Image 1: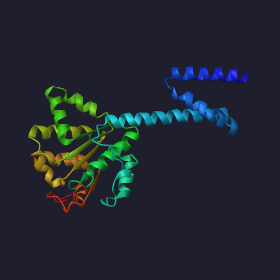
Image 2: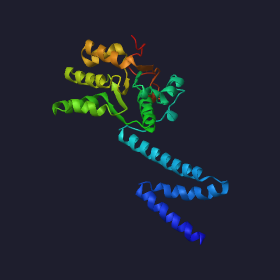
Image 3: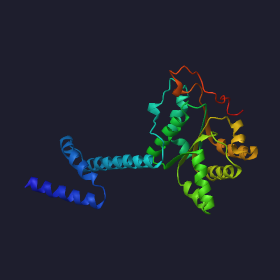
Image 4: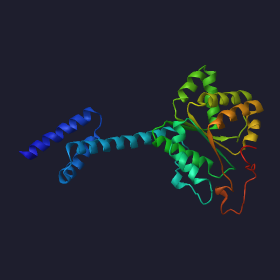
Length: 263
């Protein structure tokens, strides 16, 4: 009679798991049953082990959905980063990867010449954030301005800014590659202001902060924006030649130098 009883129990577990919309519990329960009997687990230990498998699977699945929804141009991780070519402070990056800056609504700014790994690190930190349960959005500065301009024209800018505040992390790539007109600069300033002390930003730029006035067409707007960004921020300056030029006989690109960000 034991096999029949076990069969009925499995059917009941399958039904209940489906009712809970957790079908993976059926597989976990089956895989762990023999192990639990052999090791003499208590009922509580067995139940905890089954539920732990389900929670882990859900977290992994949710993280993958958040990563796909973020809009990363490519999947880059900290493990893939070439630390030998770019001697960035690994300890500081590791601390950021713990996710604490997101809980404090702090920002990260990555400055440096093209090809030094800014976008890679921004993406990698964004993927870490998604795995920690945060919603993330990635776009270039130009794309963000286009998005905000469309919302403004439709009369939905306040609603769009409020919606974006529900994202734990927004990544703004390539600040400074193209200058903004005055209206675009004002919209970008509103994005920064709306997230100030509410949610985190990661920004990358090939320009030091002293060059941002030319990007946004107004020194006062740039100064007010930088003030809000760096008030609660880690600023990392990447140096060196572009990794894309390795082996091509070119030492550097004709891009702006990377001085101290405070310049």
